[in-house]
Length: 514
Image 1 (cartoon, rainbow, N blue to C red):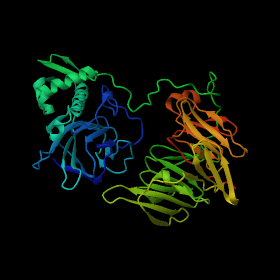
Image 2: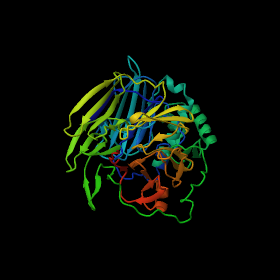
Image 3: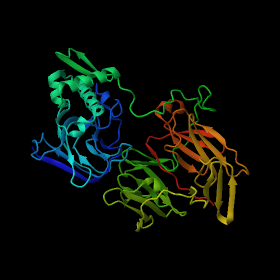
Image 4: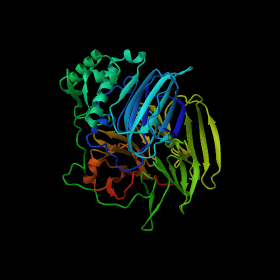
């Protein structure tokens, strides 16, 4: 019994009172094991974390609260012996890893950049122990070791468990989910022993889940019985809209399919970080960094934000620019040479700083920023290419200012945004999905709607190839109608093209205006 690896996070700040650990995505299309669909995150109606912690296929939630927590993740080659140090709450639960690498994140999501390397995907057991820290938050110890799935078992319950009957129901639901996968059958006394409660508490919870239809006990509660879950609902969340109106022309024409067009102008990135570009009719590939989140083309190469930030020179050479950058804050100067991007560390010693990077020679300068303050004045958006600035004056009044003393007041909704290059303004809608284009070449822009297929989220993966042309990501349900995974829309002329290429991220092209 040896310790094989350890990762410690001294200042983990959970969201909504929930510690969240997940598998890092490493590409491909992972699927839960046969008979384990109920173990996917979001498949069952749960209170996050249960009374102590619950886990499934690629996820683990712990019952936390506000404040900074200290979390230790450990990998052992076999079950570690019980600790002599007293822990307030302890549970052992199976965990199915599809990537072999786990890390801490948040309930609302986040990229796994650091964590514990389990060595390989597969089945593990994890002992989750927690107790109050001397200063604030909790101390957590999560000990992983390889083991075939066996239902969870609670070894210590604190006072919080007794005060949270709804959270105990979650414990029972996950006991049912794992019992269903493993085929384990129970007697009432044994089930109560594994849940570390009395029989009356188990019977009361079984009655609650039976009323809700979440877990069914099949057999004799006075003898032997099995626990099964009802067919899981689709993971994730819905807006509550059961039927969306159909999109408009040309998508409302039966059998319509856009004509094929050229590949993305600046290239595509795969989940593994492979950059594919089309140069003079030839396909050129080179490696970058895994799990890319954004990519910007520049006159000096392609900047890729992932677990690290790198610049891919035209010849394929990689220049490392650092890590921890927030891709959405990245901005290039009008010449495309200088890049600035923010970093925000949240912890016991939080800080914000801005990285100024010279893409010509890799020179760097740091600027320390004050703690973030919500803006109190009018909301503005600037475009570095054209020098224009859009300011929201009121709900139906926006003001455009720019070089040479330009000032235009436009009676447009406050949701309009300035398109890169300054050729127009645009809004997005989702039911049905559409982009509305307001052309600034017109004296009084009234807007024209460019409809999208029914499953395309217009705000996700929107990439501007030119000042009037975008590429959007096509959802799986619309691949057959579009004929590709990407769709190009020329907003001024209302033309559509199916964009070839295999990848998950479109490189944002560099273009200048003047």
